[in-house]
Length: 54
Image (cartoon, rainbow, N blue to C red):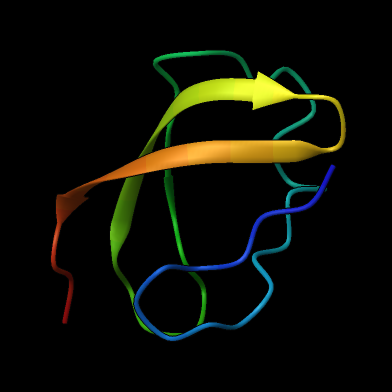
């Protein structure tokens, strides 16, 4: 699965979230923004910004 942070455009490491599903909240390890998973389409993950982070 692949996720590019909508804020900083870096790849988010999803290996720390093996049981990821819709509604799960994750944080970008680069910029600190909090994202909620809205949908998982094939290898892509669609997210929504929950908190702007640092």
